[in-house]
Figure 1 (cartoon, rainbow, N blue to C red):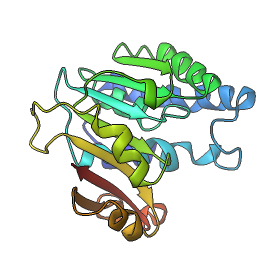
Figure 2 (figure 1 turned 180 degrees about the vertical axis):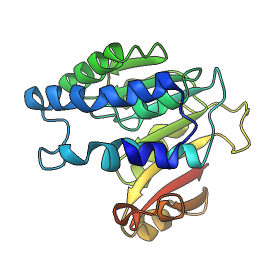
Figure 3 (figure 1 turned 60 degrees about the vertical axis):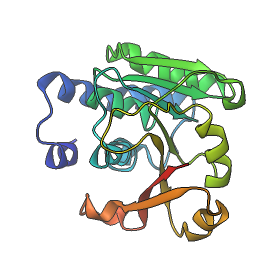
Figure 4 (figure 1 turned 30 degrees about the vertical axis):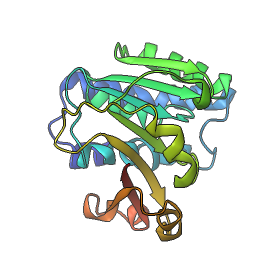
Length: 208
């Protein structure tokens, strides 16, 4: 929790309390449904919450913007981002019902009124969003066609609407596989967070 305040010192008291609540909530739910590796639950804030919040270093979502968290798992990056941007609407989707149950229960427990959680396959999803965010879901060549039919043409952010994917390791091959039809930009997380965990991690932004 201290690391969150180190990198996001302007959190309100309500946001701080919401983030604090995530610790016991995810421990409780992880005992029932394994949404985070049991070896990794002690690193919840650094490896999952702060990692999710890295997206806020690239774009500050506007009030009334709509963001889709595709393949949210236990709620990452959607829930931390929804706490950070309480006036932005977040839709969190996953094909595994028990994971969506966790998302719904956590969002309700911390009183997030800007989160909608849906058990649905992305191929069946309809709607229009400013941005699609993902974390550890699939390779870019799958994420792009899933995402881009759902992205609005109308712009309201300095960063044009597109896909923001949290990635790790060597992603050059994935970017090359997209071909020439897309614009990509890579943001190394080591530029935002001075912690060893983030040295090999990045955000890949894709605009089609």
